[in-house]
Image (cartoon, rainbow, N blue to C red; front, side):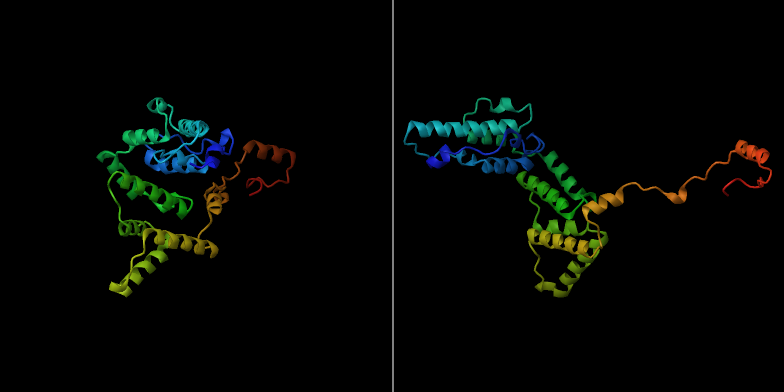
Length: 258
């Protein structure tokens, strides 16, 4: 164990300790990797496995225990209010990790059906950008994989292609046209390659003003006044009568300003 690691202190203020929504039963698989990244960013992930550590001094043992406490405290700050009692007796990060995995790691069949339905119901038009749509798609796919239901790359690609509408229809037709033209020589891209191509297609469409940016989309979706349907000014007979008496030259055969 490096003494530099043991003596180093995590950077950041208390406000930096809560980086995402609290970990709970429903979001465990989505937030688990983010929790690991949070620990890594603060130099605390290295205390996860202490089986290979060899401490030479009591000071090293003490510093390592402090690192464990810091990691445990960081996790406690980022879990739902009803979860800390599960880890209240834990003394090591690895113990907490294994406890959460035993509680939330398994996904039952009903949950898998829900996730499958949610994945198939996703639509790019419901997101401000294709990247956010793909991010949500990958998140649900990861949860399904954790539950033992793997979505192959080809299946995911075809699912997304059927959902691309509007400006992306050219991308879809080109994809299938190329597949038909090359026939057996066509090589299906990996899912990550497909996502990269789709992101580049969006950038191209934006540069050509074929589709708006997310900011423009928000402006376009804001309510506008419909001047064509603006109600006509009501005609007040009392005003007309007054004008007729005070100014005989006024033509009373039609309302004012008509």
